[in-house]
Image 1: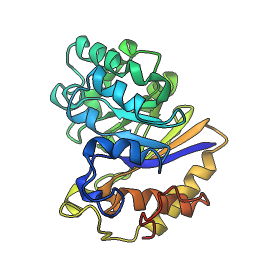
Image 2: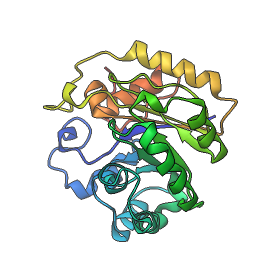
Image 3: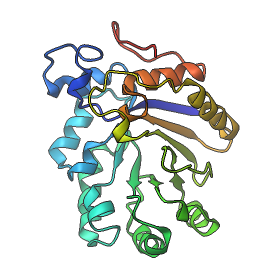
Image 4: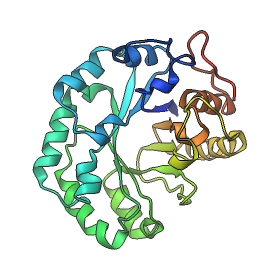
Length: 260
């Protein structure tokens, strides 16, 4: 199984001095990041609908072997709770086209307030509108979604149920697609002041998740692992820490802190 391990986002000023050089122009963050890791989860697409100029840039300033996942915009998942106009989906897919060859999947991150009773029917109506040029993953944050009907809906459409490591919810490890998407999310309140600190040793937990990936590696074509700053304090260190727990070489630039 090909495994892509990286961070959730790259545009963090707090990384300067420990991952990026101090004083680096933020426009240079992504090119620098892409020489250390071969994958990143684009968090920016969640906060603002990207335009083609942005996604053309993401493609232009990363190597050919670099890969992305990108979140659905919050206007679709949170503001309209999967019930907005089809034009929002059409616009998003069109904006992502320049990145198509580097996109592993588009991530549908649902709010914790959206339960299966409300969301299932909306999701059923939305799936036929998906652009089949892309793969899809979904992250749910309420346990009402963890049921056979939901798994069947995902499996029949090759949509990956994301394995999310959160304190508020215990994600199932159901395999519903030809790839795995593991997110070390953590809790935002746990690390808010300084993304460079490591407030908690997550190594034992990461080893357990690595073992779970090993158990399903023959069932899927590839796996994606995204590490948030809020999981252990510093995304690049978490990503490299996970790589080491599963026997992969740390992906790092010279001078970058990789040890937890």
